[in-house]
Length: 259
Image 1 (tube, rainbow, N blue to C red):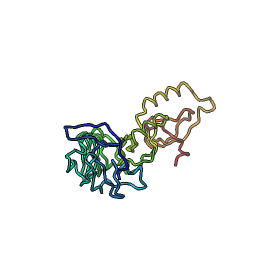
Image 2: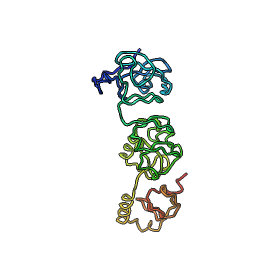
Image 3: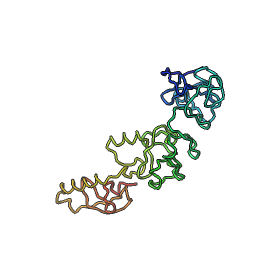
Image 4: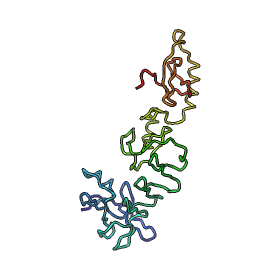
């Protein structure tokens, strides 16, 4: 039983790939036979959305050609009609898709969108990162093996790109953008500033200089801890914010309110 079959405009690639089934997730010319329930779906994500269990991509053994309907061993090309099931095929993940410069990362255990030469696998973070982050990021051990702190969905196998914060924690790129739109500027996990805030702190200096505290509060002080440099210090109290004497950050809650 083929449970999901979306009509797609017929395409031809080098005369070998015809009438790809495809779905919202991938473009391919075959269905996966789920090893768990034996049903045929375009992809594991379509399966998981319909069933009360999840498909293990690594256990897929058979596929059904969407052109000639032949059920066969998972492979890149149909053994009966020679249709190419996907420009890219991984025989470990059983991923079929159009060419996105994918590559299989052995340490990650899954396929990533490349090109491979623009990424490297950080052994401590246990994650593929953009090459410009090599030696230029804070490592957090196995950082991708935790859920996104905004949406609480899986990070490691997510098809949504990851945003690496200065503190080393990860958020989905879409979740980071949504967070910024709300005015939030701190990592939801450790409260470190989520980007370079120097311009904001300079503006805060100007705002505070133009808004002196009333005379009776000008000598008031407060103990703070800086979320950016972890400095504990006693600084002048101001209703707009308290400036860290260590790094100049205003990401500084009062110490007595900190756990």
